[in-house]
Length: 210
Image (tube, rainbow, N blue to C red; front, side):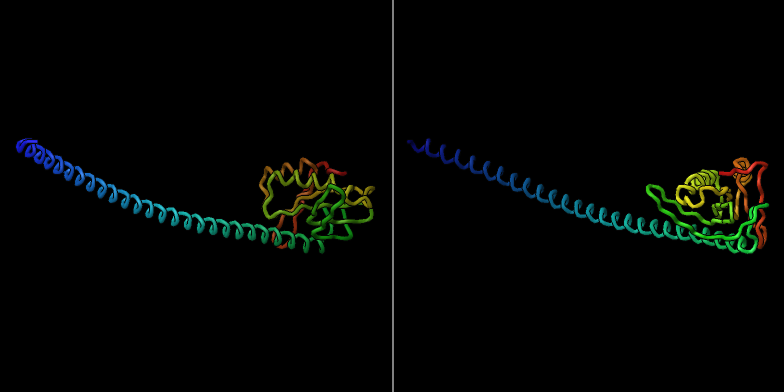
């Protein structure tokens, strides 16, 4: 190899080495930038995880609040129902009749399970040949009448000792709108309403007797 060829080879190698260093430098810079992007992505994921955690905590607190409100409303409804039952029970102990029908005994919260049937009766009044079933509500809706009618149908199955007795139904309520009251009377139920410290009783032209 001549001197000129050797010089050309050395020059070529120098150029290639410089290009290699530049390429390596660019690669290092890309790696550095990629590392920064990965770091930023990790930070964003970390912040996102923190936001998700805070959202889960907020949802948990919201669920707890809703549960608490539901319990309070349930307790309020139960307390109102208990107040209504106690009022009508105490009133009917003193005035133990439904319209013209006189009764001798009154029972509260009568529960019975027989086979597949199970019912709870708010108030049950009895005499020698009749039974009065009273569904008590703080505020009455028309669907409560269906409940009363169902309980009346099941009564003699649950209490066969009364199978020969006449069966009368009544709805007792602190608040009952005109539509629900008219529907109750048309079905042949007594309607008992609070009138100050006493009970006012209405009945339709025809009573339901089972």
